[in-house]
Image (cartoon, rainbow, N blue to C red; front, side, top):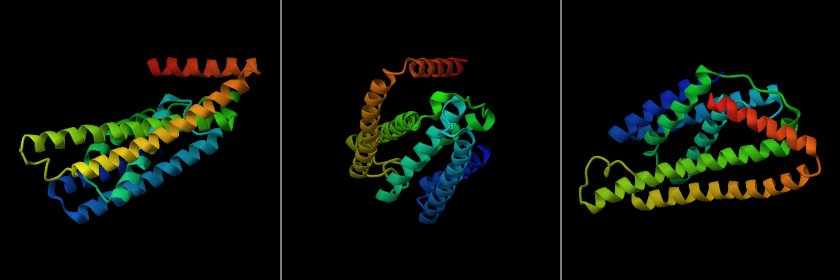
Amino acid sequence: MNVLPLVLYGAAGVAYAIHFARRHPQAGRIATTLLIFAALAHTFVIGMQTMEVRHVPFANPSRAVSTFVWLLALSYLYLEVTTDERAMGVFIMPILIGLQTIPALSPGVERMDPVLDSPWFWVHVSSLLFAYASCALAGVLGLTYMVQFKEIKKKHLGYFYTRLPSLQTLDVMNSRAVAVGCAKRGVLFKRTAYNFVSLAHDEGAVDRALEVLDESLRDAAR
């Protein structure tokens, strides 16, 4: 199931590259449309996997990467739609395509554990992945800002200057990405504090949570 989103992400990446190279408005609209379809297809895949295991699929490292890709795509689409700026797609799509290749080639098997049935547990992890996706997006925007600023400072108005967003637009996009990431981290910290207080009264739940975390780290290290 992860192959379809990968194919659509790849098609969107090609369209974004054409738009970036030629600055053709129609290519940009096609790229956005393809990315929306890719995100919808990915949403369907995540939904099917969620119904299968009864929680957001993240207990398996491969599916956790897929969920991260989905959240990163949604975060970028939010910035693109709110700013009407498509130039950053050529930098974001390789990340989406590269990471989505992992679950497409190695789907893995989701572990079933009672601790994963808690809705607050997957809300906690989903908020964490969403915050990381927003921060990753902000990091790419920050690097792009530095490239654009360097070209302007050197008065070398070349290839990237005419294609990258203005510094003001990059600043707005970066601020929104950071704001979304910080908001999610705030929800995460509040939820974490509540979970620790709740788990403190259930030693069995603590042991199961630590066991799941240990197994996930071992799988990721292989």
